[in-house]
Length: 154
Image (cartoon, rainbow, N blue to C red; front, side, top):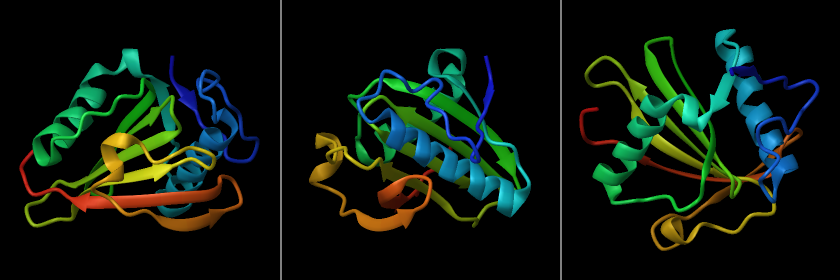
């Protein structure tokens, strides 16, 4: 069942099994606020099992681009198109959030972003390859993030 993320009253709905549920909920709310403010888009998530296409798309890009297989259990996903960009997010039980930004037109920006919830360790599958920058957020506390540019066609 879809859930519209409220960034005013942050809730752990759908994320309760995460050991960093509060921080992950803040991270999810931070993303919802960004899309509401920048694009007037309502950020709606659903359980990962209800959106296998979105999860499969993100998983395929990670695997084919960098050979990355995330070991944590995916909890929630969302996929949408806004301003000529196809977006997908996966929120994992570990506190990891992965987003794919894929410009639809040839030559557009295309990248995968990783964000770590406050209180989680860098996942083993990302630790040796990526350096994470720090960012402060009222909703999420300290967010650590990294990214890579997508080279293939998806």
